Structure formats: structure tokens, C-alpha cells
Image (cartoon, rainbow, N blue to C red):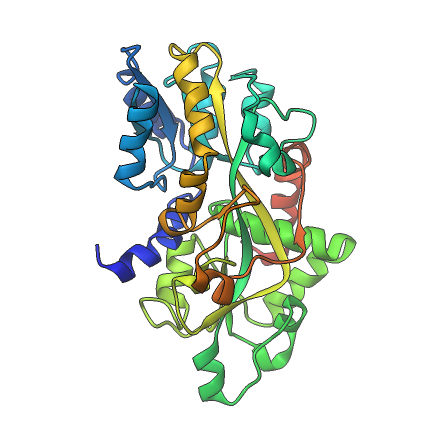
Length: 350
């Protein structure tokens, strides 16, 4: 992997979180994890395909705790949630990392998590805690789903780029935007939730206007960013794409529209029935340690939750965190997900 590939890795990995949650895949993922945590000298964490930390940090975990870290990758956040929710009390690992706030309600309702509050929670993680269940999942990182802009495309076209998602329905931006299906893409769901939070009772009026203005809907982030986006690898035809506020750090010449982003939070939790509870607790502590938090921007392209963590210089310049984001509790999302998806499908005729 080249340095540029590494910098692009986070968006690519994000794309793998498309929400295809077939039962066969779920059971296959669960089976893969069964063989992982037979030793008490090992702590096993089930995580998504995007999990990435420097090997030096993983080695450091073993040196600090005496436990070898066994990483079991299990698809996207939706698959993780399904696997954990289907196996309460008989987990496939000791801990789970990567369930986000759009799926957090499922393992909580399934009683699949063991309470634990790390000492470092008050350093920033507690601000992202799941309401009413702060001890079941611990926030590790956060990201923001935002519309990204290809600056060169607009410079070459002599058109001022949009400054708000309100602008995307204007005729001068017709046929320039690509988004993802919220039923099959987690950033696609994030953008739908951002419009629900931003427009509230006018959400689907906005979507009708987007459709009339030629918005293109694709299945997932990778197609949208790497094939359709003009600043992506495929040099597509559309200069406006749903991605992350952090994506410009990986793609020079782009920036995010920060007026209406959805706040996505990733959590770690201890699985009820874990064989190595002590190791799982140490893993939660480790993920909140200063060294791991400092590594998150360049290893997984997310913002750390610890307040005292300095972002890389280029992040402060090119990938600033939005000052205001749409936030929703996992319970609200879970309760309304299918209703909102039905309304969205009816509006975009998809």
C-alpha cells in the first residue's frame, strides 16, 4: 500500500460497511469467530473490516497486559450488530468494536453486552455515550457524514461551489450530486438522517427537489466516491458526493460542506458471557489510551473522542470537524429506521 493508498484507506474501508445483512453472511461471520478465544492468554475482539491500528500499538497492548489481541473481522457495522444480537450470553469473542450509533440499540435490546465504565471515559468518551446506557458501550471515535466538493471541477466550470446542502436543489447544480442508498450504505443512511435532522417536517420535500434536480443514487460509498465523484479514483462526472468530513484529508482539492453533517460514533463493548472479561476491560481501556487515540486519524480516518488528542496538522487545515452536527439517539434511529426508509424509497422511486 502506498502512502496515498493509506490516506485513502479510510474512505475505502468505510465503503465496505454497506448494510447487506444476509442471514447466511451473519452466520458465516459468527462461525469465523468461534475459534478465536479459547485461551485465557488471549483476548478476542470482533470488529468490522475497517479496523486498523499500527502493529506497534497492537504489540504494545500485549506488552502492557500480557494478553495477545486476536482480531476477528466480521463485515460492516450492521453485520457486527446482527452477530452480537443473535448470540447474547454465548458470544463469538470477548469484545466488539465498531458498532455505531445507527445500530447500537440492537445489541442493547438483545442484552448482549456486559456493563463496564473505563476510568478514561470522562476524558471525552462520556460525551458520546448512548443515552440511558452509558456503561454498555464506550465511544472510541466519531466521524461526520457530509457532502464533499471537488474544488477543481467548479474552478474549471466557472461555477461557484455550493456552500450549503440547501444549494444542491438549485438549477445550477443540476445533475452534479451523487448519494448512496440508505438501505445499503451506512454513509447513505447518515446523509438521510442528516436531512431528517436538518429539514425535519420538510425532509422528503427536500428529497423530491433533489430527485428533480438530477441527484444520482448508487448502492454504496465506493461506487459513489471512486466511480462517480469527479475527484475520486475513477474521475467521474459528478463533483458533489456524500462522504465524510475527514475525506478531504485523503483527497487534496476537496472540502466538505459542514452545515448539515450527521454525527456517527463508533463504540467498543464487552460481550456478555465473554471468556476473558479482564482482557476485554483492558482492551476498552487501551482503545481510550492517548497513544491509540492519537493514531486513529491516520489509521482509521476518524476523529478521536479524547479531548486532549491533537489532530494531524493537515486535518486541522483540510478536515476540520463540523461545529454543529445532526445527532440522534440509537433508540430513535432504530425505532424509525424502516418508516424513514419506506418514505425515502417512495420519494426517490427506488
